[in-house]
Amino acid sequence: MSTAPAIVYYGDDFTGATDTLGTAARAGLRTLLFLKTPGAARLAQAGPLDVLGIAGAARAMSPEAMQAELAPVAALFRSLGARVLHYKTCSTFDSAPHIGSIGAAVRALRGAVEQPSTAIVGGQPNLGRHCLFGNLFAAAGAGGEVFRIDRHPTMSRHPVTPMPEADLRLHLAEQGLADVRSIPFTVASQGPDALGEALRRTLRAPASGGAPPGAVLFDVADAAQLAAIGEVLWARAQRATLLAVGPSSVVDALAGALGTRNVATPAPRQVAPARGAVLVLAGSLSPVTARQVAAAASFDVVWLDAAGLAGRNAATLERHAQEIAQALAQGRHVLACTRPGGHPLALNPVDARALSLAGGELLARVLAMAPLQRIGIAGGDTSSHAVQALDAWGLSYAADMGAGASLCRVHSDLASLDGVEIMLKGGQMGSEDVFERLVRGCAA
Image 1 (cartoon, rainbow, N blue to C red):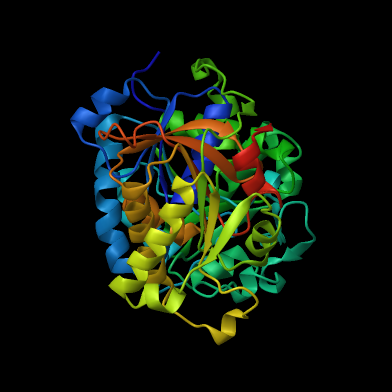
Image 2: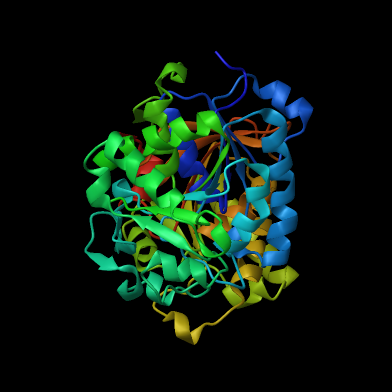
């Protein structure tokens, strides 16, 4: 068995990175998520891995910052001898030319692989994301109504990266990914042989100047098609290293083809009740998270002064930290929310990045005053900045909290932080009772 990981992935935010961590671990693949590009000592500490993840915050970065962020990832991939480099995007592909550009990520990473054409997997059915004839559709919350992404009630008006275009080929072209070809889901439904032949034909059809297409977009209508996609992509990756872009469905697809590596101990299917008080920091402004907050009956809700925190007001930060820590020390569960109760978002505009950074500072301050065994964070950018504020170096998968929400174990050189359980979830992810599950436990 090869000692090199089969897959190296970079998650463009921490919530998505933990979703991929869970996807790989549940498939029996030895997986660890590093919180920054690891050096030789950390790699040796981790031991043999099938999937090596790196959590980042590229979806909140400019193209220039992304280039600097991803250069060490490309170098690590080349040094390890892995076969697939996966740039993990949000399952809704929300991004823009000026921030979180998927096109910029491809430009930063494609020099690390041998194949000139990038593979893009366009859907993640277990989260209600489906790509049909190049167009992306997404459910509004777990089990919710499915909308074309440019008509989605949340993603079409996302405060940072709204999605005005459903055709992923056009969406990515605006980010500099020219000549994205599409293979429809009707081909994947015919199995790997038909899909492999369609891919060969697509790659033989030259783009301008006689070069192969810059990228090939694979439709995904349902989960059954992922096996064919994974078999075809892994066969190609065995011959020449490959860059793959998309949500956790990239690893989900490849996991079946990596069956000989599936030797990890199966993850537990049950989450035990929390030992002690639980803190949840909810920085997401989505309607899904708002419903989850409303359903969190076990928690004391603390409405944070978002403007004061985003404005770096030290007194505001300390006041909130003291209030939250005192409640936790008394054994009460606390849900700290950055959206004032009952106030529409439009009436409270704040700098989203500044607020996310402040959320990380707040979490670190609270944990210094009131060490905990279990915490949760809601919101992609909030999760990324909050975890980066902790003195931790990695995460391993602990258990499944429901679609798009994984419970992870923190790895840190600090004894007070090492082993703490943390749930990271995007604003659209998780069941309505996900915060209650964090307190009471649940069966997968």
